Every structure is written in structure tokens, then in C-alpha cells.
Image (tube, rainbow, N blue to C red; front, top):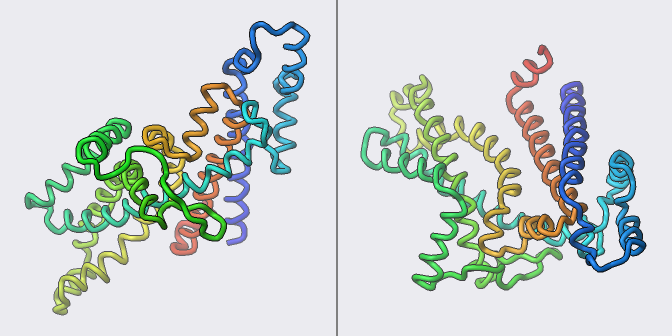
Length: 325
């Protein structure tokens, strides 16, 4: 087990190093922030001084080495636009993004698992086919279009829910949360539903597939032969065996929710990391862009590492197969 853990941690560190190099080179190879932040009317001396102050007069490899050394100490640079540490800006927006992602994840599981089981139990009836048809729409419809349609229907047409902003928040253990206030919950509902759409469709299809396979297993047939009632068979024998793979995929999707919340946050003016990164890209605020991408990659890597370790503990065959390979 120790060898397996060390191997997975080593792979994670390699991924982080490679991604840091790709992200840094990719971001710093695009555009010149000096052209945005410095007026064209400035003199050459003032322009050179500004470039030196931003650290853009050094070769790219020197800037990368400095970036890595600072990152190891928790410093991902200072924002060109805000003149504050990039990490500070991102951490200020992180609670809003996490709240949105967690809400979308809860909605996906709450709606997707029951609908997936219901579709499996009624696969040949109209209700099962309807659920699967709606799940295909969930995969196919663009997030930005669905977000706009939700605004048109529930905000403009019916006037039930606000179309933008985060609403009122309350501090919970020092973290501002909107879900604990009625106004904040009303602001959260539309963006959370929009972000949850794709994952709800994914959970439906995964649950349906797993439930259909479980219903054909011998232990389910034996439970029926014993005279167990259908709710007990579904709740105990079927759900227990399909939830592990479903929850594994959902855990991996949590990182995707954080990363792809950019579109939803932009549509609903949700003050999270996604809105910050869009604003930073517009002005080529490189430190903020690099810090955001590295934080997102780190979240992905940590979630994958945690899922690998948890899955190896739940199913030793995964660990043994990896060691043999």
C-alpha cells in the first residue's frame, strides 16, 4: 500500500510540474500587457521602467524559474491590474465558486440518482424513455444558451428569480455564504441549476446503466426468490453496488464543475473565480491567469489522487493491478 501511495503522489507531482511549464509558456506567449497598462503617450524611459517593474524584461526561462521558486513558497506573483498578490484575489473569490460548484453537485446527485434508477426500472416504458431523452438534451444543449433561456423564463418572463449577482451573504466560520440567506438562495438557484445540467444527465445515464446491470445479477434474483420487497432490493442490494462507481465519477467531475463554472459565472455575473479570470484575460493580467490555472490544475490533481487512494482501499484489486503493471 505504501508503494502504491508513493507512486501516485510521485505521478501527481510530475503532472503539476509539466502543467506549470505548459501553463506558464502558454500564457506568457500571448500578447503584451504593457500595451494595455501603459499609455502610448509615455516616453521610452517610462515604458522601460514599467516593463522592468513588471518583471517582463527578463528572458522567459528566467521568469519561469522565478515563478517556480516563488510558487513553492506560496507566492504566485502580483496582479498587474490590482497590484495585490494573485493568490489573495483568487482566494477572495474561491468561496463563491466552491458554493456554486457544491450546490450544482448536490443537485446533480439528488436529481440524477433517483431518475437513473427510475429509468432502469421502467426501461421499456414511456417514462424511462422520456428520462433518457431528457438526459441526451442535458448533454447536447450549450450551457450558455440554457443559462440565457433560464434568465428569459424565470427572471424576465415570470420575475420569480434574480438574473445576476450573489445576493445577501452571511459569515459561516468566517466564510461568506449566500445559501444560508433567502435572498442569496434565490440568486444561487438559477446558476446552480445551469451548472448542474450536464452532470445531472451524466449521473442519470451512469445510474441507469449500473442499475440495469445489477438487476440481472444472481444476488438480486436470490433476493427476489427470498420474497424481499422491491424497495428493499433496490435500496440495499442494487444501490449499494452502483453507488461506488457513480460517486467516483461524480468526485472526479467536481474539479470540472469548478473549472467550467466560468461560463455560468459570466452569464449570471456570479462573483467567483471564473468571473475574475475572464476580467483578467481581457487585460492580460498574467499572474492572475497563471495562478488561477495552476490552482485549478492542483484541485484536479488532488481530487484524482484522493479518488485513486480511496478506490484502492475500497477495492484492493485496483491497487494490486497497478503494482503488477
